[in-house]
Amino acid sequence: MQIESTELADVIVFVPTPFRDDRGLFTRTLDAEVFDATVGGGVEAASFIQDSQSRSVRGTIRGMHGRSGRGEAKLVRCANGAVSDVLVDIRRDSPTFGKQQAFLLDDVEFRHLYVPPGFLHGFQALTETADVCYRIDRPHDPAEDLGVAHDDPDLAIEWPLAVTMISPRDANAGSWADLVARL
Image (cartoon, rainbow, N blue to C red; front, side):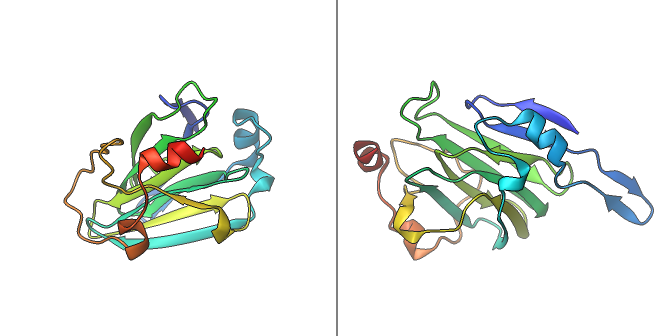
């Protein structure tokens, strides 16, 4: 498994090496030893308590979501199809506060994106359907939900496709300026 650093402080990409043959492929989706040796900040592979999966159709955007309080660590991958996955650092004391980065996650390279607590996260489905899998380190508490509109002009996220679908919650999310004022 290869490890890639990113432009965002503490965000890591894990790139497994799938074994491919005539039957298809086999790939490791989590290696606790590699994860624990790479990720700091008190998050260990054993910290993940929930696995979730979403399926989205081409052009759908899910996000931009975050958590208040102590935040939430995630390990994200695309099991089927492809997505443009976007992170925005909302940690006031971070050297990359307010910065964003997009990542291609797909079912070819199976890159895994480690998202530490303190980030907004969202993605857009690039293929007919895309299945995104998340490992999360704590139970969901709706009282801690944060959101910023996917088309907020201050963030100016460059989504690769026209938006075809978005939830009412995401369509009515707040602004970056409002979130920064609350942090």
